[in-house]
Length: 194
Ligand SMILES: [Zn+2]
Image (cartoon, rainbow, N blue to C red):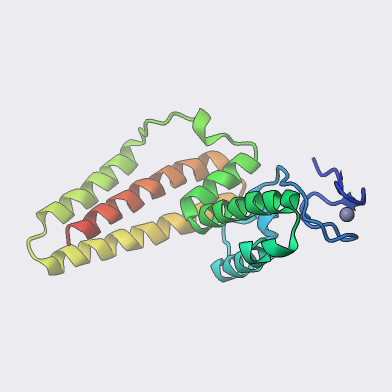
């Protein structure tokens, strides 16, 4: 996996998560690296989002179109590709749900091979209860209160998700991640109805 590539211009060895030749400074073609490696940040669910943003801004500066006037056509092509890869990786890592999905895959757990139809009765009941409470709320105060409850539930699910990643319990992490995506969906729904 972690093989060096060779610079297309000077044939210097390039480590897997490096995109600029350290010898000739030429931009290298995009390589297959995961989002964490691409951003140069540690592979964890409990990501420091400020650190992520700093890494993102730093990388975007390196591959920014403003630099294109100094580059060859080939480098412009690579730079454009890298820039969009970086954008995509940043968006994915910034969301807890897709960050968890990436981590599951990196640890050999394929979330898509799991049954997509969610059938954990306890969680479904929990979600139904939250929805009913919101629907039955008569004042906007009550509605806000029920959103607060939902927010608590979301933080609680995030904490459990973090623990299951620390314990390497990926089947549990996958379930919690599905639950989290349900909770996030109804939160968006509720906010529209406020
Ligand atoms: Zn080179």
